[in-house]
Length: 149
Image 1 (cartoon, one colour):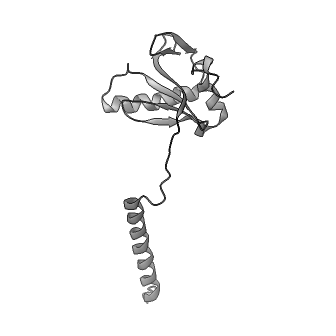
Image 2: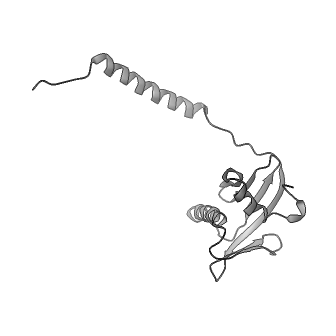
Image 3: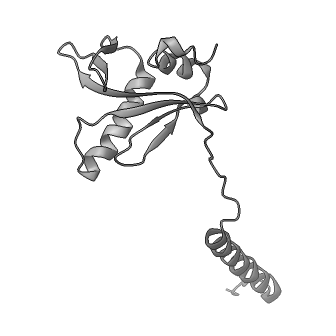
């Protein structure tokens, strides 16, 4: 049975493509080519919040400065808020930080909204998930500031 092998020029061309791909990937990572900068403008409104599990499976959200109730989420509702908090809390636990420290919700001058953990530096760009998710978090900002109106 005869042995079939690819033509040598095709093998050389494939090796050149692989080498070029690795070279470009390394250059891009070293020089920041293709990275998008996520520059935030000045904050319009900001609120530090603490989150605690309620006995019924809900979530109690308090203002970190005065301890006042910001929002009580019943069990089984507001899945996006719950998922965002779980993500930040998991990173915080893995980093060994206290669960009691507040998270910071910020409305930015360019219309974006973010939730950040100042201990780990993790930030979730809420506005990236669409207007429905933004509305669920806007309720947590100080209503007197009329942020997006």
